[in-house]
Amino acid sequence: MNFQPGKDIPLKPVGVQRQDSGVVGVSTGIRNTDNEATLETTFLHTEPIESQKPSEEPTNGLKAYSVVIGSFLGLIANFGVLNSIGAIESYVSQHQLKDIETSSVSWIFSIYMYLSFAIGIIVGPIFVMKGSLPPLLYGTVLIVGGFMATANCTKVWQFILSFICVGTGHGLCITPLVGVVSQHWTANAIGRATGFATIGGSIGGVILPLMLRSLFPKVGFAWSIRILGFFCLVCMICAMCLAREKYCTDLIPMDSASTDFEEMNKRKKFKAASKNMLSFNALRDIKFSFLIIGVFFGELALILIVTYYASYAIAQGMSESAAYILLTIFNACGVLGRWIPGHMADIWGPYNVMILMLLCLDLSIMVIWLPFGSNIGVLYAFAALSGAFSASILSLLPVLLSSVTIYSIKKVDVSRQQNPFMESEVETTEVKYPLEFGQKYGLLYFFVSIGNLFGIPIASAVIGDKSQHNYDMFVLLAGIFAIIGTVFWIISRYCLVGFKLNVKV
Image 1: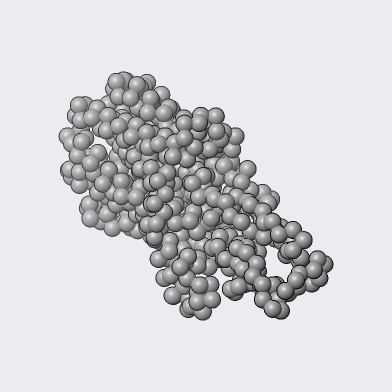
Image 2 (image 1 turned 60 degrees about the vertical axis):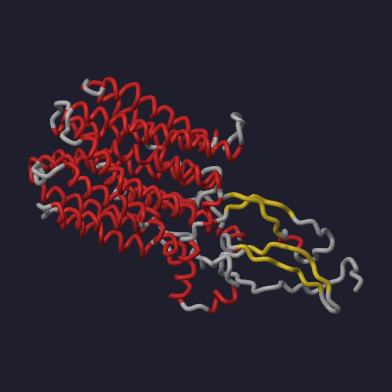
């Protein structure tokens, strides 16, 4: 068959065109038949094809700002509580559970931390397929219900069950609250948008210890925790109203034909999508594997500081009230530690900024806290420095993770589809692969949560009888974890760009 320029020739894609699915058609060649030209198309499971329309592209508009505000408020009730957990740990250790060994008490908060991050690997498919409302709604019920139960606890097993509820609630909420921001913001502004949203965690870490510090002596533990639960309820209601997804899409497994997937019932769809989300194939990416190790140790160091810093200060002679002030300073400086690195990441790249922040955290632990931690003034200084340097671990991670989930694909320019023979060349563009991003995000926090589960009991065993020597060993342990994390972040960056220092990555 001879093709003539200007002559209309029917095109038929091989496969099924789905205007509502997360599919991008990628040209793989043109096949000739006797009566028609067939454009061979391979479907990649990326963002919905409708997102090519301007109405669904990230716009940084009013809706985008409202989503950031909703995420900000929701993270006050989630990361804010996580950042304030040291206030609750120090109180129950001195009162309800004062006769219980530190190692036994530690399991309350290690299981809580584990669930807060591990459940994200399950929530990913729910968020992408159903939107943000279902996980936020169920998570809110568990958070508030868990705090109402915590108010009446007096035994270790009671605290464990109550914090299982709270931790599960956090796990349901954190993934959609963080993930929804990226749907509404362009690539050159997502660092600042995510940074501002995660500031909610630092703001919560400022407000909640001060609130508990004031409430504990006035209304007692039970009503203080109930008020905390109602506070979280108000924040989450606002988040559910504002932090709404821009689109939902089917998570089509890479080994499934789109026609087969479309014919599945809802249960089979979710099972197939979840199986793909829980795949460990992403670990074949060596730079991602090293990144997991780096985040594992870096965040473990952060969790140990957040959990035991107040108890450490009390062991140095500070009052409970003053120890809560330290947590407030830690989180207040974390506001700057989330906002400023977010701006810096848009300019110099998230990898570069993250490694710089971690190096500063390593120095502050080993040079300031370890040798001079018994000095009260040094405790205030370290709270400020560590809060600023460690905050970016949570705020930059979603942005940084996109650095290892971008790849080149070939796709047909829409303007050429009317007559593709006038210019057959296809353009190459850099696109994000949301399914892979969600898979990697879930895998990363799955492994990080394991560190939280066992790291806190290990640290409590090191603290032991709370002697000065044991607390020094605890600080050394946190410092070693932070240094190991920094080393693997650097190795991950090397796998990405080599020894090049002047590269934005």
